Image (cartoon, rainbow, N blue to C red; front, side):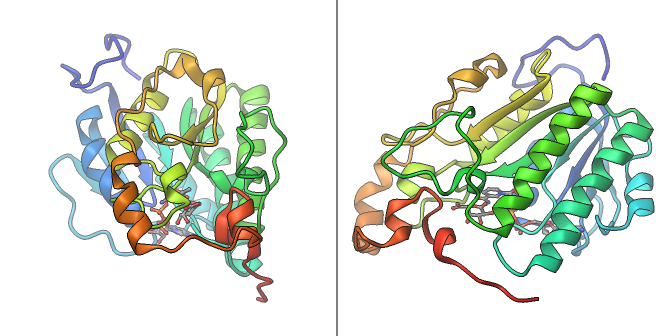
Length: 280
Ligand code: NAI
Ligand code: 15L
């Protein structure tokens, strides 16, 4: 990272990173970040195993399978910082989750260690704590209670990044993202919604916070009735500007209330808690 940049600033007068890596750039959130993080780097290196199209000005397109250690090491060459959003994003059979989210995140941290990358923003998930009740308000010191193999893989990523900070000094901000879509799609998302603008601001704060060490933060907009308390990550300076509240009438009209005995209505992970079992 260049020393001359003074943060935080929404519109940096110089680009603070020489080369910023974005994994998962072909995905739903990756396509948003690919465009919106562009002002923060001289070169944005965008990567995925899915097609990424042509490189735009100031971009490098580097296809990469995250489970391939050598390919990931090459992917990290010349990189200052990484925004790691690549991986399986839903619950399902173990083998793909193992390869993408467990082997993949290990390859990412090993490459960062070897190359000397000092800051990673890691897309974790609210499903790390999906078996806490919707009636509880929790913070990051509450125990992990993953609601599936996908959630377990994100617990692994959080623990691995903690280890790489304590042992090797690689700073990570783990984003326990709620539900980040163009708009909330069901009643649960009235609590868990993270707007794209708030997502971009959260990633910006995670990239530029002076000394985050290893920080875990929930990625959630300013929704009334949100379940997550981010007080312990206040040093990142993230302040959500959006809220799902105005969407409540539309969402309630289109999605009927669940039976209150339905586990999806009891636990924070919603339908994830009753998904599976999955077989490879
Ligand atoms: P997505 O499924 O649309 O995108 C994930 C991307 O990762 C895909 O383009 C896929 O091709 C790529 N990928 C998967 N396995 C790979 C591998 N082995 N090698 C290379 N690329 C691989 O997911 P989305 O919604 O964009 O989420 C991005 C990240 O944020 C994911 O890590 C997800 O777990 C996390 N997240 C997203 C939430 C949301 O509300 N959208 C909520 C919580 C977490
Ligand atoms: C996630 O972790 C998923 O990646 C995303 O697709 C949503 O399902 C989200 O959680 C959610 O909890 O709504």
